[in-house]
Length: 334
Image 1 (spheres, rainbow, N blue to C red):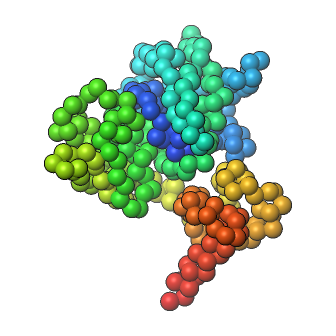
Image 2: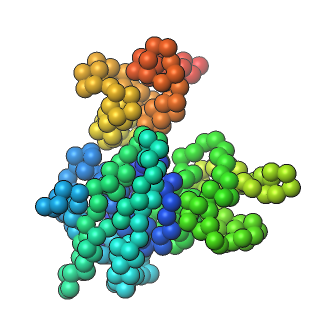
Image 3: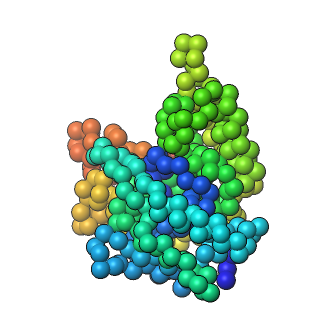
């Protein structure tokens, strides 16, 4: 049975709704969620699953059954210690997933149902609610792209959360301590700011510095005399980036292949109301944008201005992408 260290690494795309949802899961529960996101993304892209995974619809329309090896949820030093997995499955079954969708609607649903650990086979199976599957793929509020292998090997839950929040970020980002505690569902812990920094921020930063392609510096911000917020300054650590993934990204650009093409198409349709024909009419521009830019990131950045544009969101998106590409081409000639 393959262990995590031998699982092929990949960049996975995670909905910002999922990233900022309010929950308090432990490390092994989060690894189960990471695998759910991996499977949901493969489903969206129409990719054939690794033979070790299966996902099937059930007779109940709102549930999907997932089967996978328990070993894919363990790190090397936890080899065959399936006690953690059984405990995580039971805990996830008893927990809810609380989030706000793109319309501002507040929802609470169970994460998984009917978890089982198959005797002798070392396989687990469980059922996922349709809403969890959809939230994992809902990019209406934006997204985060991160390395699956890196996320799976973190030992600290706060490292996982900050990795998701800050990965790929170029500009400083500010969160109030109150909102971070709500997001991490630890409102009743760390009453002193010093304790929050000591037990949440610093351990996360240390593990990100050690293992992640992204980490952060931070600055405490005051309202009056009281520390109320933290400004994070993300930075890249190229030495921690998977070289194989970099080569894969370069290969895609050289060959104009588009591994995320269904995600981009759905993003254009769901967020800007593009039709299939409108996408086809602009396919050359979109392919060039994919070659020159991080297209999903650009679309996410343009979204807020698109709906205020006089010429409408679709014309604004196409025109803006053309300007950005022309600017990139001009830079390349200098």
